[in-house]
Image (cartoon, rainbow over all chains, first blue to last red; front, side, top):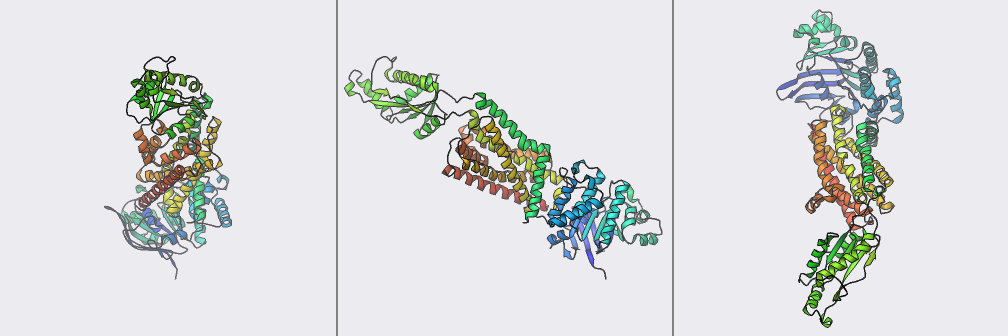
Length: 248
Length: 386
């Protein structure tokens, strides 16, 4: 039996009149690459924010790495790495300094810090630009730094919120390769995206979320067979009557 | 609290200062340019002169007969000399020794009785009660040594005897003026201690802006997803701002000295000045946190920061030198006042670090800084939870 990395039970988050997440139930196993799909405003980012302790749920329970997010947030923050949807980097620091800063925030030993930073710079093809100020980077390069900052401390569980948004195809491929490697390292990865081809390419399982509710769950192949369609985009169309990209 | 996190965040804050032109201007270039301009305009480089022609009057006449007031009135009416009244002879002597005034006239307690004795028996010296007014002069001032004794002598004779001074003798005489060594101070010397507090105050704005910047860029949220605690984050800002304050003071000192500032005091005075301004930077971080918490945007942060900056600037720095007595009293409610007061004591009066007034200033600044910082942290912490 696989060990659960993330367990979400009856999770609801309300903002005054708006229900951003509505009774969500979900389990993500260790070593699993799980895709949370849906249009903008579906509740994906709210779910991630609750999982990493930035938001408190209105009701329901959330366990990350076997720890309750409300009771043991400090332990959870040691286990997780988050690549936010909006790139959040210090523009006056170099790319390398940004990554090192977050490694230090996770109190990594000096030797391991250096090794991990060098490895990430190499894998994400940003070594040549590592000593330039991040504010001068292109959008794609900034996103790669954003990702490296989330993963430099080698977290057990990674939350990647739209990691390839706005990237050119070449950069996207490089990031996909990197994400696949995370799975090979037996990390649990929760990936949100509204690129259906990305989910099909990378994810072991996907959950389709709309208006805060999980409306379908399964492997990409399984869902395509279940709905007798060619891709996940059409699965979403059948489920909601609209195209996911129209919402973006 | 983990040192590695705090040190990494503090380093990041200091790099922001070095690499961000706006922060660099506000914290370093602005003080350098301001000090240089002010020093050149009002310091020795500009041939700055002490204020001259002011006589401090210490009226000890207890007779209530009005003679001494009449004399002081006559002195004022000369229009040549300014008159400043003192109730305390020590304060007058202190101001003379600092060059704030050029002479001290001491009217003795039996002055009125002596004048009356003359007018009761103008022709019978045996019935006169003799007395002597004493004059202290700034030995280094040509005006003080050459002109003031004559003017005071003539005014005294006119006030007491009602005639132009000739060879007439009377019971009231003026003793030989005592010459006092006065340090030559410029306007810049008076203002310089307040300069250090003035520039430090602008840290309120830069702290508020840096918090808002990090908030708007999603960096604070991102840091909150790491094990970093709020106290570590704020401690890093506090430490980096203390370091920045020390760098700023060192640079302002150097520039001030380059343009002619010659502070009194020894090495301990300088160390104390750095210490006081470092402590004061805690207060600025506290106000900056409060401004950042209240502000919704960077522009609003600047505006709110000025709500804290303006009272400190007007009431607690060199700007307060020309303010009314009431405004000066109001200054006691802003921490900057005590910083300026301590630095003035150290560098203008040459007071030792252990003098009670300086220790009291340090105590007040420390307490105020801790209170403001704690308030800022609590307010910011509440905001962070929302």
